[in-house]
Length: 112
Length: 112
Image 1 (cartoon, rainbow over the protein chains, first blue to last red):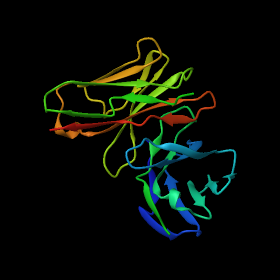
Image 2 (image 1 turned 135 degrees about the vertical axis):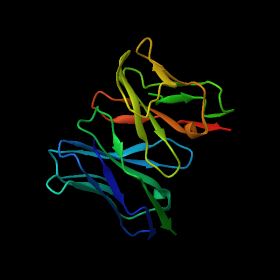
Image 3 (image 1 turned 180 degrees about the vertical axis):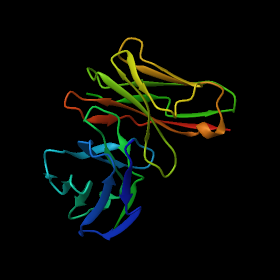
């Protein structure tokens, strides 16, 4: 089955700086890669996703890149703000409506 | 669109008792997923429904676990004879027509 690894497990950045979280996956058949943000006591919130026919996708301060050859994808957050502090999870699946395999999460702390 | 809702939000039970959780997906979302999340880990797939049909069950879903979606709308997850190892956050998600998975707030189960 699919295995997703995520790094780093914790990340602290100064407010206004950029944050990058990286994930690798094992199943070359995977084609859908979402990112979720989870705040304490809440369910995961979808923040951005990318499908295998696209190499990069941006939404305001958030971007995701995908390298299918190397089987890795990354989340980039620019101009970080205190409200970006949360746990971020990457995930992978065969298709968008299939079960997701999650990474182990990255706790992002934005230092004011 | 009121989002995915789950009830109860918290449940404390004694070992050996049965518990049942409910999930109401976003209306018109045909696929419904159950995941389990333990502290410091990403969500793990348990089972999913396409309308009222249960199409896949993870090996994590022991015979003490049963899930239903009788009319293709809300779903229930029952755990019989709870064990301390069942303590976790149980998350429900439903899939949009464009294949994104949206999660509910989760039910936190504590088995004492």
